[in-house]
Image 1 (cartoon, rainbow, N blue to C red):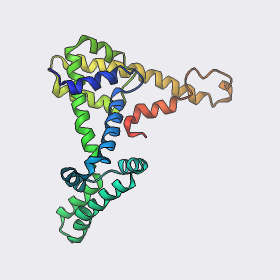
Image 2 (cartoon, rainbow, N blue to C red):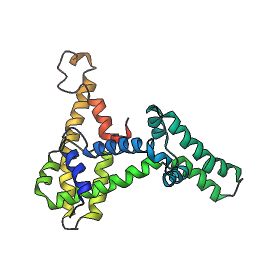
Image 3 (cartoon, rainbow, N blue to C red):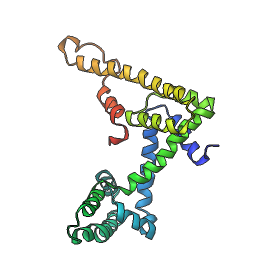
Length: 225
C-alpha cells in the first residue's frame, strides 16, 4: 500500500493539468521548507547542526533573503560561518580532506537535500500509483508534459521501483506524453521564429507567442525561477 502522506499531494499535482506535475510538487516542497527553516526550526539544535554542516545554495539564500526574515537568516549565517567556514579556513592546509570540506561548502544545501529526499519519495509514489490504479494511468496520460529533468527522474525511479515486466509499459506511457508535447512545442518555437520574417508578420500567432517561455520550462523545469 502506497503511503497516504505521499499519495495525496501526488494525486493533487496530477489533477492540475497545467504543466509538469513534479515541478508543482517541487515548488510546494520548496515553499514549505523555506517557511519551516525561517520559522521555529531555525532555533532547534538538530536543525542548526545540519544547516551549519550543509549550508545553502545561492538560489535558496536568495529566496530566504527575499522572504524578509533578515534576522533569522543572519542568525543561521552567523552560526554557519562560526561553526563551519571559519573553522575550516583556520585549520590550515590539510590536503584532500581540506579540499573536500571546501567543495562541500560550495555544493551542499540543506533545503535542496530535504526537497530531493521528499521528491524522490513522490516520484516512487507516482510509479506505484501508475502500477496499481487504472484511474492514475488515465491521469498520467492526460498530463500536458513533464519537464526533461523530471521525465528522466520518472524513468530512473520506475526502473528500480517497478517489476521488470511492467516497467516498459510505464516508460512508454511517460514517453507518449513527452512526444506529444515536444512535437507541438517544436512547431510553436519554429512558428515564433518565422513570425520575425516580414513575410509572416501579418499571420496569426496561433498560440506561439509564449513558445520560448514554454520551451525553457520544458527544458529546465524547476531550475528556472
